[in-house]
Length: 212
Image 1: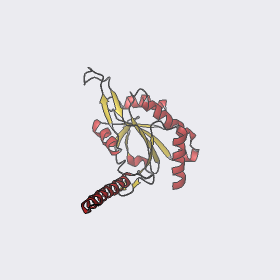
Image 2: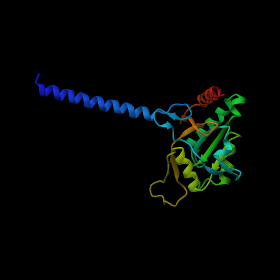
Image 3: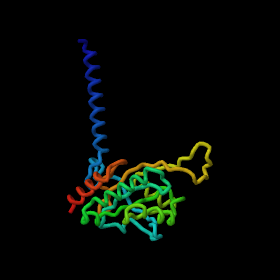
Image 4: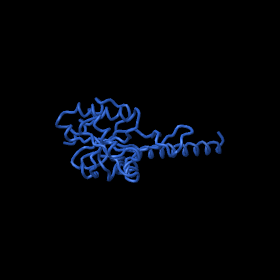
């Protein structure tokens, strides 16, 4: 075979090998392991952080209020027609499935992504429909936006075609994850939309048992 052809073949192999190796490196950096939010390459996953919000009784709450407890956090809104009630009910059922000694270490929390409509009064009316220990948090637009950003929550108002942008009849498209945070406030893992209460309870219990 012509020497120039061999040179070209070798060059192509080297380029492909480098590209494949670099992709593996990038994939390794992106993988989050369920161990205190640590990642292979970047240290600590950037999920979670400080927040200052108001609960359904009007009391100011920060992340420091929940130190020493596991936080089970869901972001949504009270006007949500289906996804939020489904996930909050899954959280409620999971809490009921946990052994008592595990359940008392877990604080379920619902954080609004629609503070314009989710007032303290609205949260006070909504939260009791779910678990008795569920805490609903709302606040100013800036406060709730900061909390959502810290947890990498996507959300955007969705108006029907032709509906005025100042109408309050909108829906909110948002990501739907249930976050399990450690007693130190660090991210441990999350549960995807549609996860059964049994799987959620099993995941929580496994984490608590391995950390006690």
